[in-house]
Length: 146
Image (cartoon, rainbow, N blue to C red; front, top):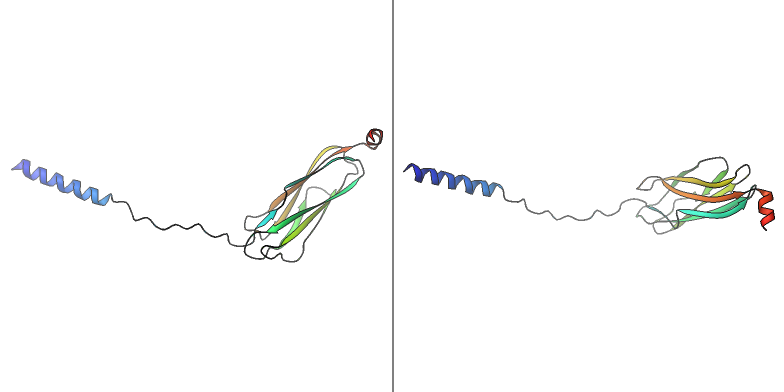
């Protein structure tokens, strides 16, 4: 009799444990839609190649607002006074384009240069970076090679 009661008790515990282990119902998961403005540059880096010391060069970085709300560039920071930025000042609507221009003055610089331009906006992903790269040669070296 003890064996029968013990077997029934063991069976009851096993069944109740199995029921308790039932997996929760799967919830329908949907990928969240990208909300807010999204700043997407055509290129992240531009290389001017070799330039002569004292040259002033300029490049326009084009971007598109790939988000679903207007994009506003708040400010653009540069790493030194040798680079001067300008940018689209009005809000850029979804699907529309804008620009960030970097003007680089190579006076007093020599050799390989890589300058970061930091674009602060209401972009959903925070600040974005673009870079200008160049190799600055001395005036006499550049003139002899031409």
